[in-house]
Length: 428
Image (cartoon, rainbow, N blue to C red):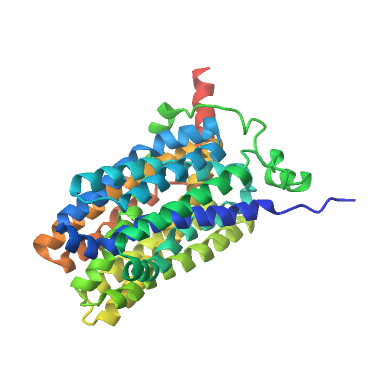
């Protein structure tokens, strides 16, 4: 009699959703609180842009080391330590009273959060059947994008009740709780989990190499000689750059350029993120269905990724030139929502080409994405200050062209592991 398999991996996917949600709420809180912080502490747009950038410097710095740590020490330990670290510095943000303290605290917050995405990439590789990578990735991404959906409204409510500093303390405490849950439940291998039976473990490991748990350093020299490796990083730089323009500046943009009040901004700013969350979750299911039905990964990943960027840049431009606040919010909602196709395709393709080195490839891709995060706050602030908000939004839309070109070289049908084996055979 065949044993009915458990489905504990999806419970962990839900926990992964909440970890991603808390981590991005910690970022959204700063952008929503920006008007109050600027007023209380006398910061300029450039000051706030530099504070946002300080986070991304620390975050980007830890991407590649985070991937290596995830493969050597396991996603369980690495993510639990990372969540504890960033939660402490999230809470400390509430104690900041000058620019230097603010920038240093956000940089340390970024260092702590840096290993999250690579560790999750390793977790998805180790805990999900190959036919489930897109859906599993969508749990992480949906958590990321659900934060900004409820973030503006929730943060505004907490700010009005207790002040902006309280927001960071509350979410710092929540992060510590979620870190403890992850360490308790998310074993490095499904076979060592008391909540996973043999049938589920066998299903998860279908097609997985026998040395999946072997501690092995990724062949970076071979990777760096691959056009795929560079292409997936460059396209993600553009994708994240656009998203981080929304994350860093949407609340202030709606208040300054569209004349929204604080309360109305809290509602309007959630619409684009709700669209992104919904599209990302739906796209993960569609992408996996296409692959299991025989559609090539090139079509199911690459074409979805390119389509998302085309729709994003077109509607972002329309939003920039819209003549009414309601039309502006509508086009911005469609624009950010369409990036859901690209985000899901990016992470699914990253896992496709990364294989057993998914942690390192995830770290590489997210490193590039967060170079976009470093650039977006400051570049947007400079353009908006010198040329106005419309010019800043149009410039952001134009950047999508670079990402579209890069996607053509990703080729998710050809895993990097195959290239590694071919290189090693030639050397032998």
